[in-house]
Length: 326
Ligand code: NDP
Image (tube, rainbow, N blue to C red; front, side, top):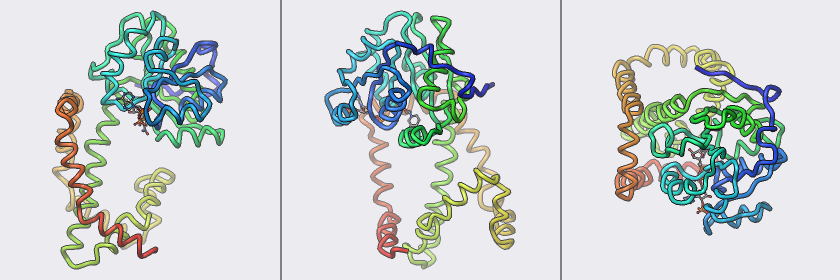
C-alpha cells in the first residue's frame, strides 16, 4: 500500500533544467518554492496581483500572472486553497499545459473527487507534506525535512514517478521520508482526521469547558487547565515520542486509573459507529459534494458556524486567561 523513499534513493535529475512554476505563494507555495530554489532549481511564481505577489517579489522571485507561469512551466505546482483550485485550473492553467508537462498538487482532494481532470498527455502527481508550510521551510533550513505522502495520479510520460520523487527531494521531504502511496489514501486519511478525529477532540474540550463552567468553576481557569497551560500539547508530543499508551507512565497512577476506567463510560460505544459514518461520507464523496455546493452558494453554513465558534464564551475566558499571565 506504500513504499518509503529516502534522500539517497532519489535524484533531482528528472527536474534538471526544467522550468518550475509555483502557483500561489501562501503557506505551502512560499515554503516549497524557497526550498526548491535552494535545491538549485529554476523557480518562477504565478500569482494574481494581490496580497502575496509582493511577498514573492521581495523574496527575489520572478512573479508573473498565473496563466503565464502555467505556460512557461514544465512542472507546475498548484499551491492555492483547494476550494479555488478547480476554477483557477480550468481558466488559467489547463489551456497552457503542454504534453509532457507535470502538474503537482499538495493534497489529493481535487484529483480524488474528480474536480480536476487534466488531459491524458500530462503527468499528474501529488507531493503532500505532513506539515504546515512554515515547518516545511524551517526544517529544510535546519538540514532536515518534513515527510510527505506522494502519489502518481497520471503517468503520461512514463517518468511521472521519478519527477514526483525529485519534487519530494527538492522540498526536503525525502530527508524525512517520502511515503509513496495513493491519492485516495492521502485524501481519505486527511479528511477523516478533519471530520472525525479533530471534531471529536474539539467537542470533548468544549463539552468539558461548558460542564465545568456550569458547575461554577472560573472560566479562565478552566480554559487554562484544558488547553491554555500547554500540558495537552506536551502530552501529544509525548505520545509521538513514547507511545499513545506508554506516555501514561508520565502521569500519576490515579490519573492512569481514572483514564483507563472512565474512557469507555465517556465516549463508547457510539464513537466507532459515528466515525465509520464519517468515513463513509468521505469515501462516497458525500462530503466533497456538500463542500462544493457550500462554495457555490457563497459559504452560508461555513460562515454561520465560524461566527458561532468565535462568539462562544470560551473566547472571553481565553482573554481573561491570558491576562492572568500564568
Ligand atoms: P494558502 O491559503 O496559503 O494559499 C494562499 C495563496 O493562494 C496565495 O498565493 C493567494 O494569492 C492564492 N490564492 C488564494 N485564492 C486565490 C484565487 N481565488 N485565485 C488565485 N490565487 C488565489 O494555501 P495553502 O498553502 O494552505 O494550501 C495550498 C495547498 O497545499 C492546498 O492544496 C492544501 O491542501 C495543501 N496543503 C496545505 C498545508 C498547510 O499547512 N496549509 C499542509 C499540506 C498541504 P493572493 O491572496 O495573493 O491572491
